[in-house]
Length: 153
Image (cartoon, rainbow, N blue to C red; front, top):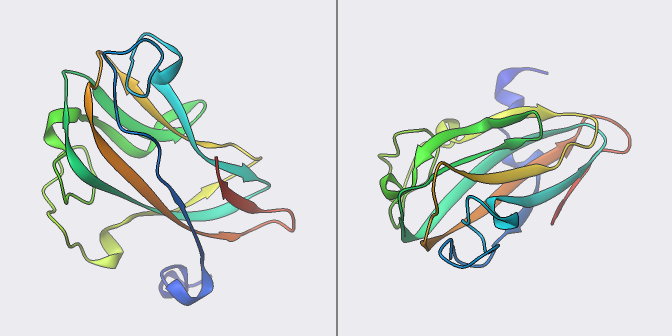
């Protein structure tokens, strides 16, 4: 596969995950770093797939926690661990130091990544709670294996 083919949006399917708002001050809610809400499955994957991820913040994140996106065994494999308060409304969160308000070059999106063996894509809150804010995720994907598929969790 040529690199320019990997960024051809016409060859990707698109699925959106829009979890509930962060409420880490509530036990086991999204953003509760010590509870079951610390890790949140965004997308369920089967087989092997190629993915490009576009996390979009709609409400500033608050709290002293950090956030990362990846798979089990590589929790920051897709988006590096980032201090929550650095992610603001209209940011397209592509790196540990977000600086993009509302627009980025398509080639700046995170990916394409190969996600293999049906490893789900997860968001993880670390170090402390994220008490408020909202991020949704657009996932552009295509199969690499015959059983490759991505769906919203």
